Amino acid sequence: MKVQTYYNHIRFYTPHHFIYYPLLTLFLGFSVYFAFTTNDTKIWSFISVGFIFLFWLAYMLRQHYALILQNRIVRLELRYRYFTLTGKRFEEFEYKFTDDQIFALRFAPDDELLPLIQDALKNNLTGDSIKKAIVHWRADYNRV
Image 1 (cartoon, helix red, strand yellow):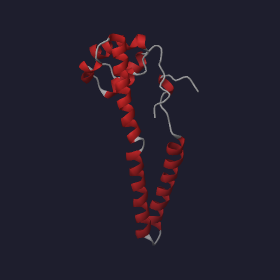
Image 2 (cartoon, helix red, strand yellow; image 1 turned 30 degrees about the horizontal axis):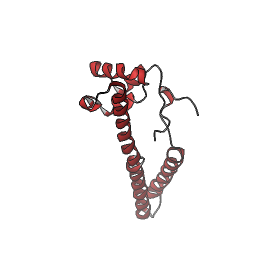
Image 3 (cartoon, one colour; image 1 turned 90 degrees about the vertical axis):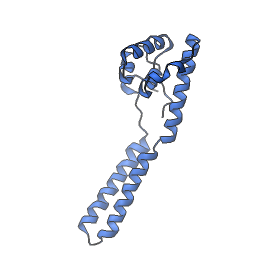
Image 4 (cartoon, helix red, strand yellow; image 1 turned 180 degrees about the horizontal axis):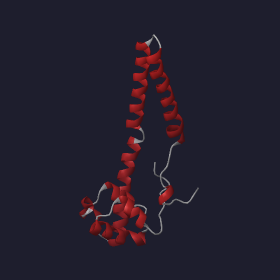
């Protein structure tokens, strides 16, 4: 497995991103084309609406449940790591962070975590800024 860094931490799911969507786009394009160029306008319009619905459904449901659960787990992991390092509860000031900031902090190793938390609070760093500030990237190979 390739070493994870800021520049390659985004993952794609090949069947979803490179097969399903391109094929659905192709079928939608053909159905719209036939809806405007044939005498069977109603049936091809109906088929086009069906493909549009499939796009919408795939967009709305893709990884939705897994990501929500994963976000909760990332929060719990950060709370646990903070408590382990400091003996204090992270929840006392967790509300000051955005989701993006919390999710970025998971890539920080333990020795960089506390200074990054303080810097993020003090300077209101974005999640992307937090990721760029990490010197020794702590990879997350299990993210969906």
